[in-house]
Length: 85
Image (cartoon, rainbow, N blue to C red; front, side, top):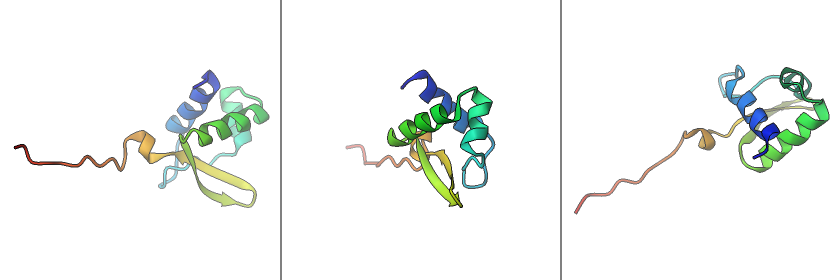
């Protein structure tokens, strides 16, 4: 993972979210927060999505919202139990 990709993941991990875990900010706003040009932020976020770290949670008009994939955060992890023999 590149430095920019880590920055995007950490931004989504630390930024305030709605009840579903989605960050409700535009890419331009998020890019400004971390000091990236909006096209660089969008390209990096796309890479992070393709790597499975972010998932789309919804869309209003042409603006898409994302959250960290819960599986990457350790949620919904099921460990099968078995009897000791």
